[in-house]
Length: 274
Ligand code: SF4
Ligand code: SF4
Image (cartoon, rainbow, N blue to C red):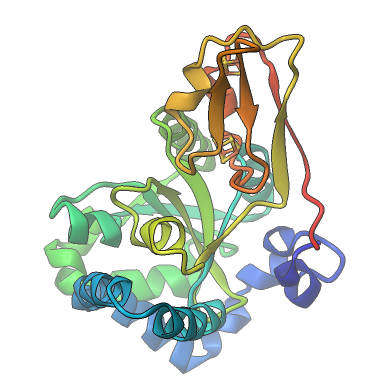
């Protein structure tokens, strides 16, 4: 089990623990304020991009110290973990309401309203989380609240999330005041700031899945379709064997590579944490 399961899972994967989605956690006014600020004061994301670019030019020792501080803070406030589609389906077995909302990362990086993010709640009507978003009114990303908050059935949301997978987007769950989980995102390396921070700048704020992948060499034909989808640069091609090779140190266990494999040659196994 990973450190988050040990701390917040009570014997389960932490994101399959319904208590981490509970309405009680939203009684905390600081957590509510954090969510409101996160969604409305999006300037902090542009600031983060500038700071990361400055940090990238700093001496290694400074990068290392500041990077650790960022990771520590994000684990406390707002971190993500990669989750394969099977576990997204398990989450949808116990959450009771799903709302699609604009992605604040894409709003910052692309200047566009891309609906790749899903607010999830254990309450059938969105509960306190829905109230927070509806309460943001017109200030919420510049639009009327009924446009910014699309209520979906769980079936609709899952179908859309499966479509995002075919686009090569990696599913992640996110805390808002750890351990409270309120969001499922669909990330890519170019547009998602957390993935940029984690993969490009090597400052972890988004963590690998509870799984890791492997390829069956007897089934792999070396077509290389899977390579197109890996956001983490974990797949390479062996010209000698005419098959792909997965770098276990780089694989985040998202399972996205499976969706294009015509031979069903890629599987997920439980990750062994050190
Ligand atoms: S190789 Fe690993 S990280 Fe890359 S797409 Fe497959 S599961 Fe995800
Ligand atoms: S898509 Fe499947 S068959 Fe093609 S290279 Fe990847 S693992 Fe092998």
